[in-house]
Image 1 (cartoon, one colour):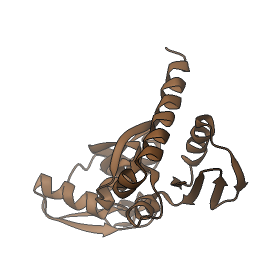
Image 2 (tube, helix red, strand yellow):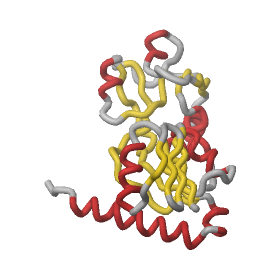
Image 3 (cartoon, helix red, strand yellow):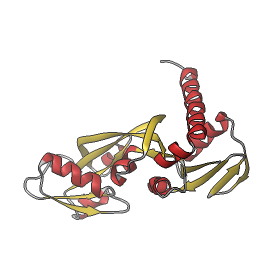
Image 4 (spheres, rainbow, N blue to C red):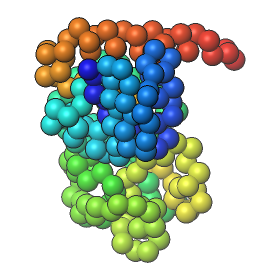
Length: 208
């Protein structure tokens, strides 16, 4: 039996649609658990997906680049699924640019932000937040923010502008290395079916 960690929220419906197209059916469905023949799906917070795999509770999961880089796990990443692409960016108040000297940066991704500052040779004070990162520069809590954006609309609404793109975020299929060894046949069969469904869906999409 395969155990999957499915991220709740915007990706949940798309991932479950792919699973059903792959041939899985579910006899029991709730907000936290989906059970079917030869498969169990744990519905978890996106940030918790790697934790379920690292601790051996789940064999396969679906996870954004942002979470993988923040958590710094050694999970196998065979391929990604097509979703709307977003970006991790550095942003600040419009027209002010990047301040000299120590920079106060608010973010939900302190590890990603720390490494980014180190690559730029900046002396930074990282301010971890759980939500409403855009408020930090307005309230005077931070000079800059590091956050995810898809369209940039929320940044513009808060009079912020993108100062640098740190990386592109995709949704990766991730595999527990132990499961890949101990359940290799099941895991490989699942990945092949899933990739086939994804490629078929891509081929069916209208071309512009």
